[in-house]
Length: 361
Image 1 (cartoon, helix red, strand yellow):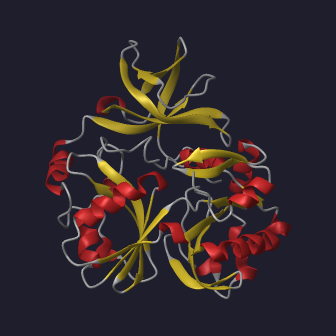
Image 2 (tube, rainbow, N blue to C red):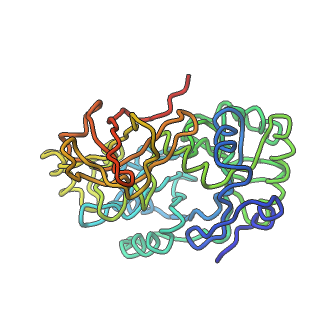
C-alpha cells in the first residue's frame, strides 16, 4: 500500500482509512452525511493525491493527445482545462481524464489512480511522434478544496483573484507561501472550489495554511465516501463503475466530449454508432419508494425482466432519497420512464430523471 504525503495527518485526525487504488486513503472522518453537507454548504478539503499526472511536451504533444483523446484539445489555450476520455479500439473507454494546457507545447494529463499504469502504457504505445512524456504521479500531491465558501476562505492565501478563475480554467501562481502551484477551478462535487497541484514536499505546508485560513468558515477534511455521494448527485461518471473498457462514450452520455472534427482511436466506429444510434444508455434514476440502490443491483422492467444493472447508487444526503445510475435499453431511457430496482427480494419502483439529481437553488 502506498501512502500520500498527508497520510500521517489523516491518521492523526483518526480518519477511517481504506485501501483504494493501491493507496491508503481516508474514506471518512466524522461521517459521510456531515462531510457531504460541509461541501454542499461550506468548504471541505479532499486529499486526492492518489490521482495520476503525466506531462507531455514538445511540438507534437497536441498531435498525440488528439490521437488518443476523444475531445478536441486544439481548443485549449494556455490556462484552460478540458474533460476528455481515451477510447479503446473495441468501442469502450481506456479512462476519462482532464487535460491542462500548461504552456504552448506542454500539457498535463490527470488520470484516475487505478489506471495510472494502464494509461501510461496506452499513451506510450501510441507515441511514435517523439513526444517527451514524464509520469510525475509519485512526485505530486493534489488537494480538492470544494464548496461555495472556497473562494472566500482561500483568497488570503494567494495574490491571484480566485473569483476571476472561471470553471475549467487555472492559474500557475503562489498559494499558501509556495510559488508555481496550479490553482484549478475544477472538481468533482458540483459545489464549486479549486484543485491544488503541488509537490509532495510542499503539500503539508499548504494543508496547514488551508485549514488555518478556512477555520472561520468551518472548513473540514472530507473523505472519499462523501466525494462519491457528491459526484453521484451531479451524475458525474466514475471510472470502473459507470464507464469502463466495455462502455461506449456515446452510451455513457459523453457525446459532448466526443468530437468527430478530427481522427482519434476508434473514431470511425464511434461515428457510425452515433449515426445509427445506441441500443442502451446510461440513465439517472430516483426510487419512488424507500430503499437504497447499490452498485450491482439488477434493474428490471414492469414485467420483471432484468434489463440492466445499477452502476452507482446511494441514499442521496441532499435529496434524502435513493438515487443511482445504470444502463438500460434506449427505449426505457427517456425521462419519466418506469423501471424497477431489485433490492433483496423486492422490485422497488423507480423513474428515470434528468441529470444532475442535485440542482442548486
